[in-house]
Length: 273
Image (tube, rainbow, N blue to C red; front, side, top):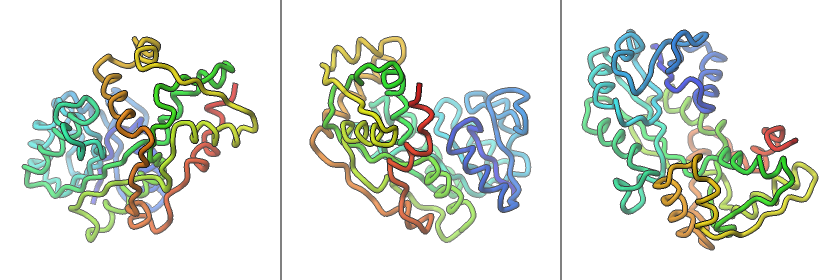
């Protein structure tokens, strides 16, 4: 059995590839970059790259790219692929998901796979712990982190847990063909996450509550307007409301989900000047 791991530069894909390599499981990594070392050319926006990347493959770990999904499904079926594990998002479960920049692409890919003959497993993480990297510049410069909703809750999940969950469903047929909502072990406000980062780094990190308009102006040029609006809407909906935590990570990996503190300890250099 050969596995294609798409999105080779992504943290989850790298972790999954390491797990497969450690266990001697045949796989190839797909990258949108031509001639990427150790990878095959597989640009999920370019159907011309699909056939060669899928040749001889029976299972695929797929990042959610909507623009080429119909062609990808067609080529996967033609290649004899039997199982696709999609890294989707729990945002597809929200009302109005089809119209939200946060979820529309994931939902489109889910629907295309569900309508195909391919056995599909859906991994739906909530908030990636790595989203905290967005605060790194302020922390390195000694400036307060600007938060439009300091009391908004998230369910930060470690990318290593996502990689292990993907490994589990790719290698155990009994776990495949289902949808899993994956969260970290704690529902934490942004303010609490910043406090944890400060504790790990051994220094005080301050934040400042700012208006939604001010935050949007500050990220202009980095986060497209519609996406920024969708983020603000989501954060407002979780302001003061803890996110539901699921046991899916432990069910799939056999161990409790890694804490946000563990993620910060693993990536402390990202916040150090």
